[in-house]
Image (cartoon, rainbow over all chains, first blue to last red):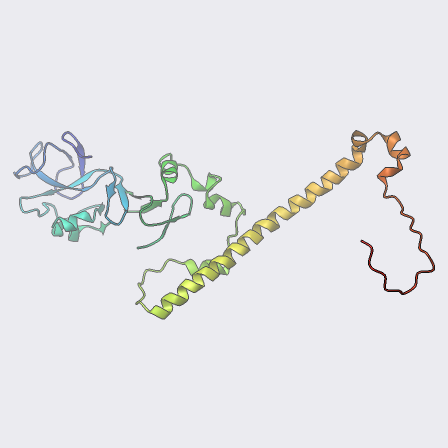
Length: 101
Length: 168
């Protein structure tokens, strides 16, 4: 359950380390400390339910910094990613991910 | 669709059941129900928890090595659908399951055999030592009803081979 004030780990190699969610869909600005940036959530500690009945839960809440088109700002992604991102058209992120679960 | 094994108790997880947990190193843990999930979160080691298959196998309570286990190995290559193959596999699954469960129950029976023999021995010994609790020794000596009585049957010598109806 990602809410405003939730701290998220950043799972890519953009220079951000931790993000705090303020609201959904904020327009992007260059990356600086305490900048407002866009990120997409890739894993949550709260369980996801899938249509095939599978319930999946990750170890942490993580996000990847993206720009306005939805392309990731970094070049590498660490950790596993939820398969739902493919359906939401974040194809670049999915292709960079080491593992999609 | 794939039938997974619960990481904690080793039972099969059918689709629509249980939770999958993905750790940060991308290792997936399947759980069949919240009981196993909660035990995992408590950081319990399944090899020390008595009701799990891991414990039972480790402590020799259940069968560990058998040729029937070879059939259940994890295969990652999908097979092209062949109706005959599918039919034969279904039949084989039933048969192998029966064989495996028979062998497993045989293993447990063997394991419990020594205990049964021991208990009977002890019971016999206890009866010998403690017969005075069952019946007073004096009465035991005097009372002949505790031994099998000897039945005297008078057989008449004049029994002929007439067809006599059987007496019930």
